[in-house]
Length: 156
Image 1 (tube, one colour):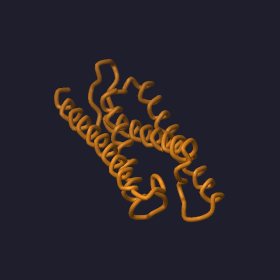
Image 2: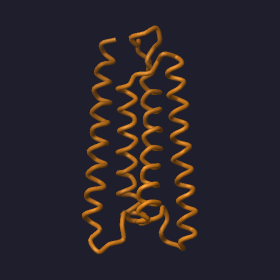
Image 3: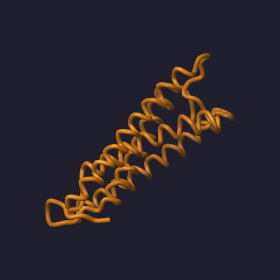
């Protein structure tokens, strides 16, 4: 799915999206890990066992975020090398990756699998609502930007 770019290269719509998606996924997982797991110490990735197991699960989660970020940046470098990079499409991928991961985390991991919750307080629903609404807004912004870049493709 390639279109002509403004330069001599051809924009690869799919690779721009997936590069941004992996970068966004890794970025938000990194932010989640650093802020909520390490600095605030509100939860670990896996809270159904001992603190040691929780810390190991955080390490694996952190490694996952790092690999996703690096993979996204390798794809980004390849797009730049081929003069095939398109910022709007890449940004759409980032927003879908960030929002999709956060919504998956908030619904699947927090509520269905019950691996952990945002914070262990009496009324966690306020935290859940903020978490999931912010995630949905970011995801919808990414989907809208993706839809707009799909429309722009028709003009090339």
